[in-house]
Length: 95
Image (cartoon, rainbow, N blue to C red):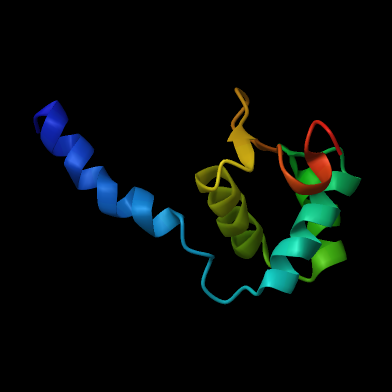
């Protein structure tokens, strides 16, 4: 596949990522933000995910979906280790 065609093929996926994850509410996403902040604003290992699951009542898949959503919103960034670091909400640099 040519690079331009690959980029165009990825556009619908990028646009879909900007939608809130199906099956989550604004309250779920706010609870996610607070829970991730409580573990240091980064999700990278089991030790990070488990407390977020317990605090929010969300499944691992929902947490991963919200993480992708926050990256698409530019309220989080991917870490070199493959995790996610929140950069918005309670984890904003000026918070």
